[in-house]
Image 1 (cartoon, rainbow, N blue to C red):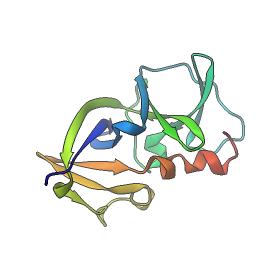
Image 2 (cartoon, helix red, strand yellow):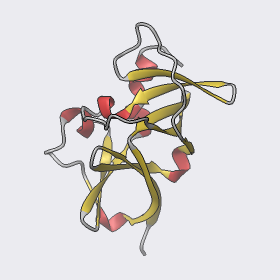
Image 3 (spheres, rainbow, N blue to C red):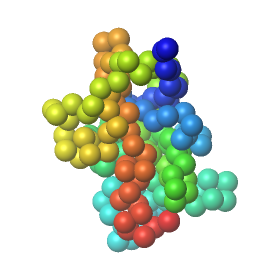
Length: 146
């Protein structure tokens, strides 16, 4: 039996990343960000999401990759500690992937990326890197910024 999963995709530079649709609270355009003094370097700041204060993590920095110099999009994900915004270059589509195309993280991925990947899906002409949202957002938890 074929097991299919829906993945919300987005881009950092020319690489495709994604998280399970079930973990996504919402996807929104750029929001003004308030800096947080003494926050870890990957924490861009906080955004006000209809009265809810949400930490914004620069996903490119978190993964050791370069983001494009434009206003980022926000992928707001649900974690055990609450909502967190992941700042990405561009939003993709929701894609359905077959579990048979899933593989472990590639050894060539940068260490910062490999440690937060669940694995990759082979899509036509590209790889979809599936993120572990709890691990990606762990820097926020370690800083005590919930």
